[in-house]
Image 1 (cartoon, rainbow, N blue to C red):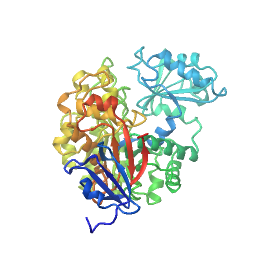
Image 2 (cartoon, helix red, strand yellow):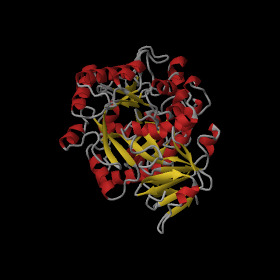
Image 3 (cartoon, rainbow, N blue to C red):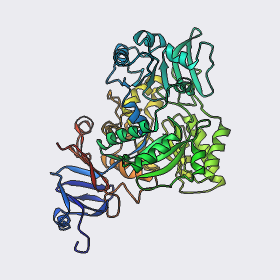
Image 4 (tube, rainbow, N blue to C red):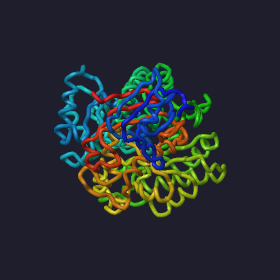
Length: 542
């Protein structure tokens, strides 16, 4: 140790998990934002100099900072200011309406009211709210209530009026506009939501920066130090790129981000990014350009994920196909040729098949065995899709928080065998397709502990077991949340392990994530300390 420089920071007296194959240490020394060395307390404390800071972990468990493989950081920050209608906050229709009414009472008439988080399968009524119900609860305000998944919303009459939407309006391509007896019932799915959202005032660039900062600090409180911004441009277009650049410049970017660019026709920012030279890999370890995002379908719980078999009790409903195959293949080939990786949304097996086919054709025309194109979510797979992904070097990017939050919803909308087989993590692990996980926040909370619980147990929030053969061991789960997330960004040599030379991103918890009972992890675990690049950025010890 004498040949090493004095450390800037030493964490000691801990149970430090360095990585899946790297074993344990008592202490870790940090120098210039990276891991300098790991080992015994005595060896690491020997690297203490006059200015070295030390932290006594008091026997606590530490590991590499967590990496959420797919969330919407700007939307997470923005929705933290919306009305919370998640099942925990609004388990009944009346509670949901009451929360909207309470917010309305604090705002001038005519102000937009946004809410997010309901799941109709968890509401006492077992269905979506209606336009009339929102009208009665919140007169005098335009209202848009968005389902947890983000693929379905319900609007009231004032919102439709401001948007110029009437009973005679037809649904746009790739969208569903709900009607009952020829009259609008408030239901909007997929592209039909744009009919209303297009007339809602956009956040300013400063609003976006505040959302990045607010959402990022929220992630740090959970020990999450890296994330994917899953659809940059989805809210306000290219202004979001400006907001990220300014946030970083001003020191208001709290977490490391991998920016995935919105690429859907009509709302794409990829052309502007390409002209500016913002291609996959450009940036630094704090903020890097990621892949291109296309939406190929919707959500399973909302019955809009595109399936090869119809949903339960709806023989004509196979979900929503967002783009024709020719368009998907053209866009995938275009951006593949320009050097981008792709990270496209596909949940149903029909959508996954469409996407994998497009990737296969692009890779056949322009081979790149390590491009690492991704299938975001990748929920419901038909025979042969895993094998095709393996052969082509395509990777699933699942969010196992969906098992916890939506597993019972899946069983309610499709046949049970298909529902329980969703998100087959153990199969992917055995096949060498990697393992990573995330939250898709604000679809689910970024809180990692229900996610970890679901990966270990395959249990939903109600305790339903979703195919126990797909359970992962605790160390496999933690590998997915650290090394796996790094691998999906081509950053496995930069972060995800606590070994010399890698970034000193560290999370400390009050319980040992590898040894505690799964229920303890889910219900009684919290992040004690978060370190990013050797600096303490969250301290929950007090």
